[in-house]
Length: 155
Image (cartoon, rainbow, N blue to C red; front, side, top):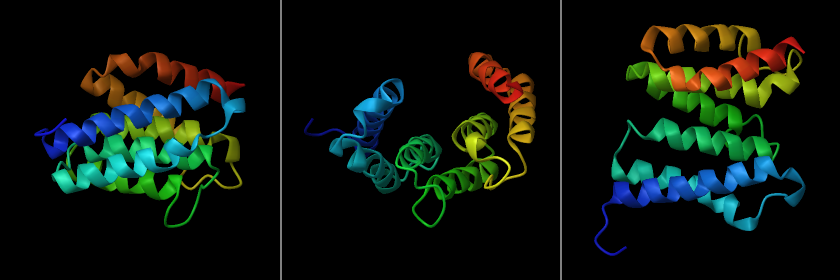
């Protein structure tokens, strides 16, 4: 809407991009609609322009999911690059809740590639660290996702 702040616009773009990505995750046969190809990068760019470093990891997590859905895993414009950038920001923050989210995303998005092409230590280590952060910081709304990922890892 006219007069909205850059942050409001960026968060709106991010919400729409995430909704589109989750719709694709729920119905992979539909494929990636063209709107998704620009939605996540636009949201991340808007967050950067708004100067909202504390919100940027959220956008980078959505961007990583988009890259994973497009099977762009490595390289400068990839799921790994987005997760690594989010990690650098969260680590400097410190932003332990984002660090837990990043561990969960890494294990979820890259688990199928383990051990051949897992860019970090291991999915199990990422989930252990996610659990430690979740329990230490009371981030209990992530427990169901963590437990689901742990169950998938055991299969």
